[in-house]
Image (tube, rainbow, N blue to C red; front, side, top):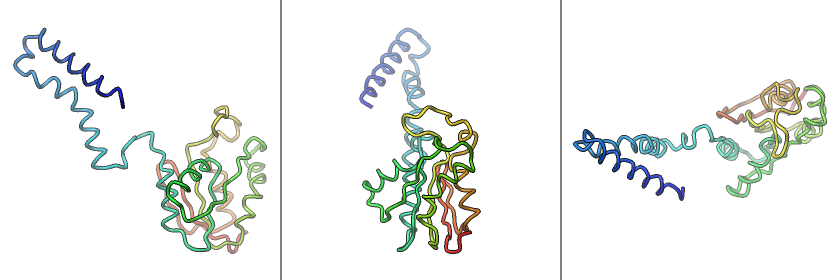
Length: 196
């Protein structure tokens, strides 16, 4: 951001030099700088009109997912945040005073050797919300590894989408009442009152 003025000065200097050395450009001396800056201005304008495209591929939608739960949260609801959303939850809990205290999921992939073993290791998390009518489950579909972990390890876990094993296990035990799918985050509302 602090280097932006330098970039504009370099563009201006380059345009000035090009106009001075290429006679054809002297007639339309404002066209070259206009064309060079058009892309940046059009992208900025688009992001001002539609703020949800800001950052494009860098946008995680974690805030939107957690705020969606906050807007639809009712007294007595339970919120379970999968391990790959714990950092986002902790931050937005303080920054936006979220109304709920979530159960923060355990990261047990390194203690597990297979999907079924993984679900077995998550059982202590599941017992915390068993029997509840409304359980919100939030997980990120694109974060396989935690901060500081070696990418793509363990192998068995990284052959699937994060949260896939969790979602299938919960779907087999409870009734999914609602869901909201964001580009990188899924939110599901389960009824565990008659959990299998």
